[in-house]
Length: 61
Image 1 (cartoon, rainbow, N blue to C red):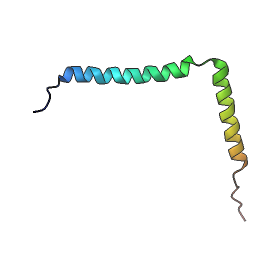
Image 2 (image 1 turned 45 degrees about the vertical axis):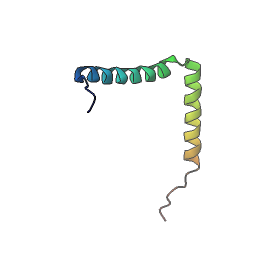
Image 3 (image 1 turned 180 degrees about the horizontal axis):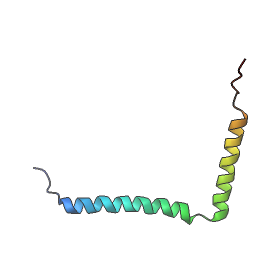
């Protein structure tokens, strides 16, 4: 026989899990110092720039 599940409690548990996931994302985003965020952004921008520089152009010949 299957376990009895309280649907109201299951719904609340699901909402709590979603809120916890959002909170974890916010902790990572807002918990890092500005210098670290700026460094990560600069590295990402530099990587994207290097990738763009190495792409082959489509020549209309």
